[in-house]
Length: 489
Image (cartoon, rainbow, N blue to C red; front, side):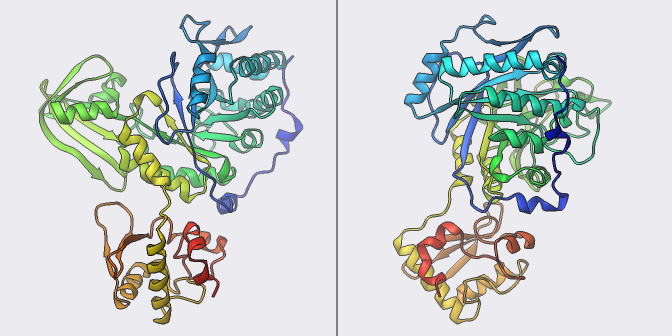
């Protein structure tokens, strides 16, 4: 039976494009970090900071007349799902089984047929029960944008069939404002999906690739930031898991007529994904084997991990021994920490990593660092209280502990206040973003971060947080609880 678009979808209210601030939750959730694992057969352990593993175990196969949800075991790969889940649970790790469909015809057959949807949902629910899964993740891509509302209803039907308490998450691309029926990135209706999913895993990567006009990062910080604001126009922030890349790209240029031309524009195989282990091998040994199986050896370095602004990514450039020019863009731990800071800043649910097998300790650490709230000890709290008391006496702050100026002159004014109060304050130039490293009289050091915890550059958000016009919050909520006497004045 063909499915019709139900009334709840036809009448779904659309949030005003000006209202992305309204969709930021009042409280920042405890961040959740998930990672997809591509067709894993055996459990290999839990990296520090990982909460959920989402193995791609289930695939839509068959024909348009009979689409079926198959496990990788049914597709010829050996995997003891129950044992895998049991071992993960023993490590405190949750497992969300991921159902994948990359074939437009099969996805269309599912969402257009009530019968096929019911069979799919029943089979998925059975897998959840059989393997004791904590949740499910849907990774349906390359769908017809005309089917986006039917896909939302498909998700709603699956939600109803799952055992109670099963977490349901849905992968989506970033949201785009300008409708284009030929753009498969627009095959999701984020607002209606969010009504029936616990989380949307927004794949905020692949900004650049073989399809691009120029080489560039997988996910520049400015692009991710703008994409989040567009998404938050229609989706509550605490339903969003920010997709982050544990990979970069190597763009190959070949020499023709005395100049290097982008070979990757005519041959997509000349754009190769690179992982942290490839980068480290290049830096340490001067060569690596790429994913095509070719050995690439450096003849001359032009850039060895230059930090690029405003992209907020690492850039590598070298000529190989075959006289090809390589331009590599990669998100290292520092780049990932800035993305998780964005997730914290927007009060998102957390992060979703593609992909588990590409990871390294430095990438996990960088991602976790952005979520780490600065929590000073007792001596530091006392020093901060003393600092703010003195600054308040110097009339740099209001009685509520808020800076009485604007975001533009706050850093300079705070430095002046600190120096006048006898504190040594210096701007750290090593890390992107404005922050001050403070040294109290007893030698205790702590920092005030203008980019994240302390000063938010968006005046509208300041208003949302209850600050008067022209005021910027100086102390993060996590710290306010420790200096409550100051703010009780």
